[in-house]
Length: 310
Image (cartoon, rainbow, N blue to C red; front, side):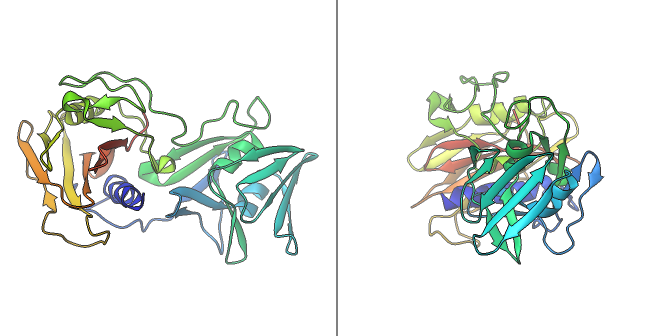
């Protein structure tokens, strides 16, 4: 849903952008950087970007493939790009969510696209096609690609940023234990944990702040159009970035039902009115200007999305 993607983007900006103060929200102005085996990849005329329609990180495949040691050929008539490395041939067509790797088809959740005469593919393509390990450092907006891994082509032995489901974690305070996608959380299990809609942008796992995030979720209650809860105890040196955004009319901008809760202290309670098509709660934890953890709660969908690996 569009509003979920907006929620993910806003929290990502709050958690992953260096700020003057921990509660300042800035746009994603810093370019995404890519390193292959600790060597930076230069993008002279086409840079990686986040596709707002899929929330996937898209990279210009020629520069990355060449850095990985592959030759790249483009067939304009067939709208197909072919990469060859050590006798292994990889081909994909613009607009398709699949590639052929030495005769075997692999699929993605975002289609290859052509922009500014450059072919862009989802970041997952690198691990699927080349058998590389891919890590996403959210606070630095840095993609690390590691090659020469065992297991050959495919996902075996690779790590996709944000791939898979959140794992089992320590239970927070309250009556709910957090245990991954599909878990019922909040007071009386009113809310459901769902897979992140922007998995490529998850923050690194941070066990220090997980208990506070879980305690926040465990305190949530939705009744008679009002969402309420409690500010949890925070780890030493951490602050919150917390607000409710009303998106009931499907447009972006300030709304009468918007709420800023950044002045609240641990133990304080909060509430926000949910009208029409609803909105979302965005709760993030900072240490200084660095985003450490966060969560988005979509209302009245009653879904919860983690903003850090778990």
